[in-house]
Image (tube, rainbow, N blue to C red):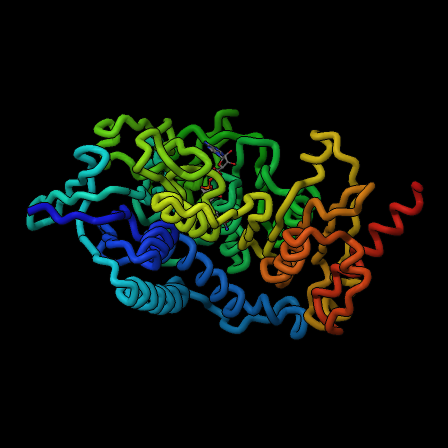
Length: 465
Ligand SMILES: NC(=O)c1ccc[n+]([C@@H]2O[C@H](COP(=O)([O-])OP(=O)(O)OC[C@H]3O[C@@H](n4cnc5c(N)ncnc54)[C@H](O)[C@@H]3O)[C@@H](O)[C@H]2O)c1
């Protein structure tokens, strides 16, 4: 007999977990299908958690966090190995898996192991080593995530030519490294390897890195990249990659130049995991990147089938994916109470130093003809910045020139991703820049940067009034 559920979720990453848990909280019968041996999706196994843990280990072992106190040559550990980094990463991955499993089990979510494919819009076939079983559900959420995009001209071998899933498989730290792709993944790993003393060449086909971030912040990051001896090759496209007999790697550029290195990381985007889903059975089509089109409630063309998380494309942030999962589960059961506003979604980019932002960039506001003013606080002017040893960080507030409402917050430097949430709260609650002027902040803190930036912006505004 076919087991019948109220909701089946395919994929146990951040978006799938949230969809399943929200539906369970509504008292629904929920199953979660996962093809990997462990829960958590790419986020826990190969993506966010490993890379952010690796970054923290790099900051500690390389002495980066202590350089301002002990001098630029200070290192906690003289010879850092890949094993040092992997040790810490494996520990955190294991803990995260345990926490996630406990959460799912506490919420009575039934775990089904195997690969799911659609029979029709209410039936799924789940195949594993024991065979195939059909399950029925009134609603289905696709949360299958993505995998690194591949190219036949880039022979990933897991040793010298890798993608972001395989970074920790590197046996030794290369002396030189080529990173292809100046998106979030490429830039984050460039920073980590450069902090470990690897000479990195970053190749990006567009004229700038992180093209959705504020230009001034990206320029500030470029300063740090240069300081860490990264060679940036912008407007250069990698056509193919070759493994040489001596074990080195050569990237052949469209401009006919050749760049040689000990290892190469290919990070040119990600591809939706849709191949196994048999989407044609429900009349849904993904695009060339495997992204599934959805409406504002995350419904696909098959109205009882939702898609959330990385498989629907931008912004591909774990935080936003979780929210998409929650909204989809709510809508599946007619719950319209969640009104999450994408304008307040935060971005955290784990470069060194970190970047975080929300709202509009100056470039977007100029394009939209919105009258705005900018206020900037440099960490070097803030006592906490000096004490912490971050004298290059900055916080930039963008606000409306007439009603002073906050239109964007952009931060680079120590604590950026935490600090951003002060600005997010004020923005979401409809506050304007006066809030920062009239509020007393702990002293000395980095949060004080909001006040300094607000004064800076108001001074600039008064000059033109
Ligand atoms: N902290 C975070 O928010 C975080 C972390 C990791 C990943 N992600 C998300 O994961 C997704 C994938 O990240 P990504 O960095 O792999 O992809 P991406 O699409 O953001 O960036 C890929 C970059 O590679 C460049 N590129 C493509 N082909 C090239 C070639 N042949 N030669 C040179 N450059 C080339 C593109 O112009 C682009 O800038 C993104 O949506 C990203 O936002 C987010």
